[in-house]
Length: 277
Image 1 (cartoon, one colour):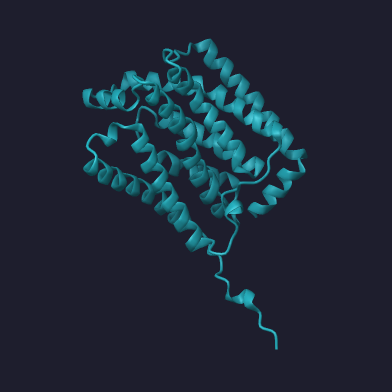
Image 2 (cartoon, one colour; image 1 turned 90 degrees about the horizontal axis):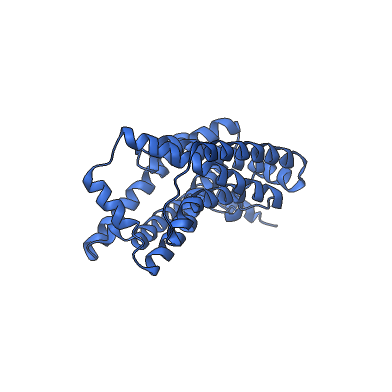
C-alpha cells in the first residue's frame, strides 16, 4: 500500500495583521538589541554606518527566517519574498518613480525640519553617522543606504509580509497596512514620517500592480540614490527647488501610468499576481 507523504509536510499558516505588526515590532527590538551588544563590544558603533547596516541586516534576516519557518515551512522562499519576474520597462519606470519622488520627499522633510528642528545631540549623531571624511565612509554610505537598507525593507514589507497578507484580502488594505508597518519601524520621526509614508504607499502600489518585489526594490534604491550618490562622490547635498520638485512629481505620475498599462498586458505580471492569490 502506498503512503502519501505529502501529508507529512508542514502546512502553511495564515498571517494576520496583528501578526505582521508583531514581526515589524520584532525587527525594531532585534535592531536595538544588536546595536546595544555591538556598542558594548565596540564603543562608538552606533555612529558607524557599517555597524548599523550590519545590525539592520541581521534583524531583518532573523525576522524573515522566523516568518518562513512558522508561516511557510515548506513553501518557496522566492515566492514568499515575491522575487518574481517583472517586465524590464516596469523596472525602468519604477526607477523613474523613485527618482521623481526623491526631490519632493527631500523638500518636504526639510520643510518639516524647520517646524521640528533636531536637538544638538541628534545633529551630532547624524553628522557622525553620515560622515564622508574618508573614501571608506563614502563607499559604506553608498552601499548601506542605497543597497542594504532598501533591500531589507522591501524583502520584509513588500516581500514576505505583503505576500502572506495578500492571500484572501484586497490589495489596497495590504498596501496601507504594510506602509504603516514600514513607517513604524522607521522610528515615527516627525521630520520624515510623512515622506516615508508617501514613499511606502507608492512602493506598495508598485508591488501590488506588478506582483513582484523587484520593481519596488528598483524604485526604493533609486529614491535613496538620488540623495546619497552626490554625497558619496564628495559633492554637496542636493538642494531641490520647487520647479524640480513639481517636475519630478509629474515624471513619477507619468511613470505610474506606464507601469499600470504595462502590467495589464504583461503575461509575467499576470502569473506573478496569480501567485499572490
